[in-house]
Length: 279
Ligand code: IPD
Ligand code: CA
Image (cartoon, rainbow, N blue to C red; front, top):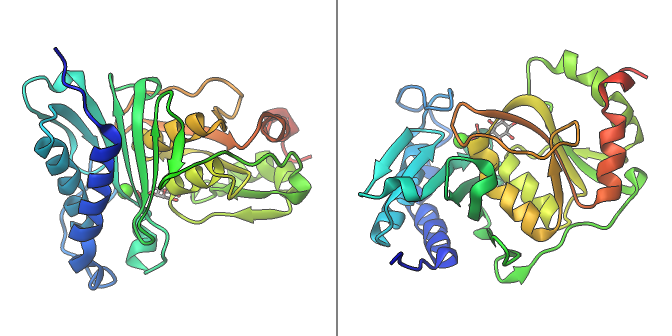
């Protein structure tokens, strides 16, 4: 018989272990770092990424869980004898640039699923590491910011909205025409620099929507936030309004729109339709 796991407890343990174990490294993150090579997601690895990843793996192992780790840093690693029964997808540090510049907005993302597929994620944590705040969701059990159940924004109007928009790309010139109408109508545009956490801001109504249509973000960054959003009652689709699903893999990229409610979501989708470019 399969053992019951208290996923919320395991994820909270991960959050505490990561915060504790990265602490000594925070003093030197702004200094030149040793060359540790390129991670599975294609970015240079830093010691802080590896320490956070190791903390995740050791908490799952300590809890007697056999799993396949899918990490933005070391790629895919099997732990235990039944590693194909549980997949743990992580971006150990989301917002590495913020962390290295001491901008207090960086997170860990951990998603647990039955298969290496986004649609099978059933437990997830996004932990704001600077403030020590955890967003946790379990399928069918809602989404929580620490102990408080969260719900998204009911603001329907772009004219009053705060909307996150990731334009962090050298291809920004080709993206702008598609986003032109949206930017012109939206009162407040933001990008904080750690997309897993920015998606949780949509889930708890801090912001009204978050849009990333670059095709640059990996599924390792969004896997946990996807569940947090769904369980909070927010909406996350492809930019064409289709169901978002993808392989959980450090090289798998996604494009998406996440919104607090259907009304504002439909307005955004309509404004970013390819045929509306540069109007
Ligand atoms: C980055 C952040 C950032 C986004 C980048 C991501 P990382 O994650 O989420 O907001 O613009 O595309 O790569 O690299 O710090 O894990
Ligand atoms: Ca990362």
